[in-house]
Length: 415
Ligand SMILES: [Zn+2]
Image (cartoon, rainbow, N blue to C red; front, side, top):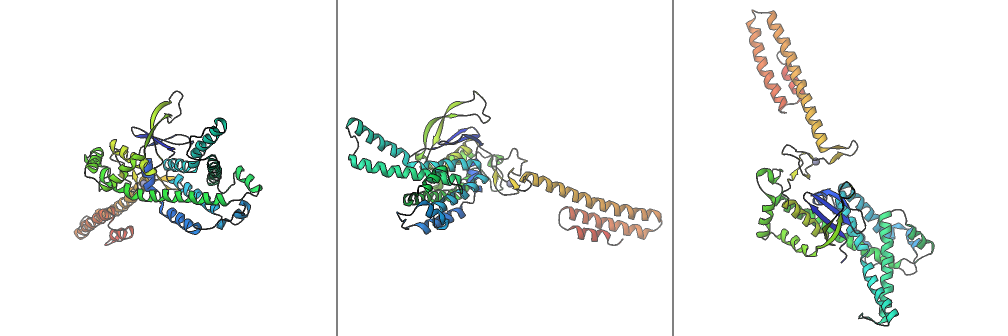
């Protein structure tokens, strides 16, 4: 266990940090919304296809990195780095908060071997310096383990660098390539890295279904508005879920065993001097456990959560009037759901005004004709009948029951 992903809540703000990645602040709910917004299923499929392709492959011991990289299609570490690169870019685009968590989690996986290596090194050095061996291994076994773990640590380091820099090589890689280094152990490491990616993707895909159900039971009402607007309290509904032994609740509640606490330093969002303070962070290598913890905090805070009427994704509305989220819907203009809804409402208003104008113009013209022939009762009756029809057509148009063409035809009838 590494416990290299950290999470801290302060009211409706959350702090996320990886082992050596900078700390970022996000509004509460950013992780859960990220999981719901991300389409991880195609990546899971791609990961599984890669596993299928390379599982059981015998990586020749005399093959060099240069030879492998010359044919990227059959080079497992090239394929895995390319895969992670695409996945990470997709996560970053959908949710920077989830990206921080996923990146921290992945880095922890790369460094899984480092701690064990250090422990073995310590035993070897103790034996060399003092002649005492407190481990269960013989000195030769210790040396063999140290060399094996050392190789794993190096190949994991290469994988991490390649995944993060893809498609560029890191300087470390360039040196290995120049020296005609054999890559069989790098291939095996890449395959085990791929295996943990696939596990992570499966967790994200499952999390999407599970979190949606948990949210529907506690935070969002059937009409898409926050439970809080219906006089219900998510914190109470969560207790009900727990007491009723809800199976999804139980599944994630058990994962909380994988959460540990660690004292870390909380930096203020705006990086003001003197704002640093110690805080108890939640730490875990089990990503779904941290996602669940955020969900629990959302309920505990009675967070209002609604469905956006434009993109149907979840968001936290500022007031009961807010119907649209602020996600960018049109990447070309940067317009958000809120902007687009406002524009549409304006266009609707313009259309309604145009219809009213046409109606007024026709009515005035007809009235004028009547006033020029004061004794013509037949004309006046026809005008009154027309006005009734036209008013009906106008309200039908305004309600969207008829289109512009039909509205125009109805108005010009009998004139
Ligand atoms: Zn939206």
